[in-house]
Length: 143
Image (cartoon, rainbow, N blue to C red; front, side):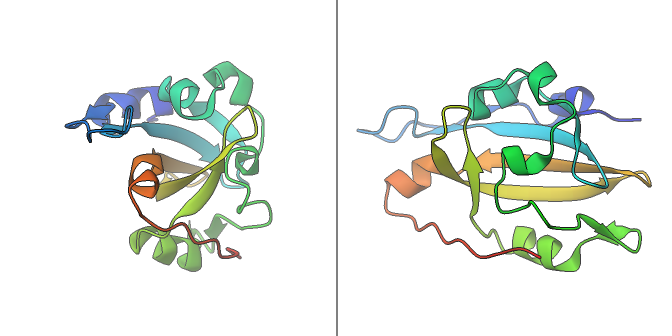
C-alpha cells in the first residue's frame, strides 16, 4: 500500500523562480496526507513540517480538520467514492483554508484521491505566494 512517504517521492517539493520582492514566493510546498475514510490522519510526508509546522508523527491519529478547518463534518468518502462536492471543488482549484501549528491560516489548494478501499490521499499545496501577489481567498462550507 502506498503511504504519504512513498507518494512524496512522486510529488517532491518543487522550487520555481522566485518572485521579486516576496520571500519564498516561488517556492511551492506540497504536503501529502494519507487518511482513513473518516478523515483521521494515518501518515504524512515530511513536507508537512514545512507547510504546517507539525512533525509527521505528531499528526498521526488526528482528524484532518486540525489542518483543514473546513473539513470537520465532511464525509470524504461516499458510497465508495470521493465526496462529489469535495472532488468538484478540488478540480476547480477552490482555495481551502489551512491552519499552521501557530494558528496562522493560509490559502491552499487540495488534490484528493481514493487509495484502496479505506484510504484517502490529500495533497495540500500552499497558495500563500499567489495570495501575496493579488490572488483571492474564498471560503465556502464543504459538506
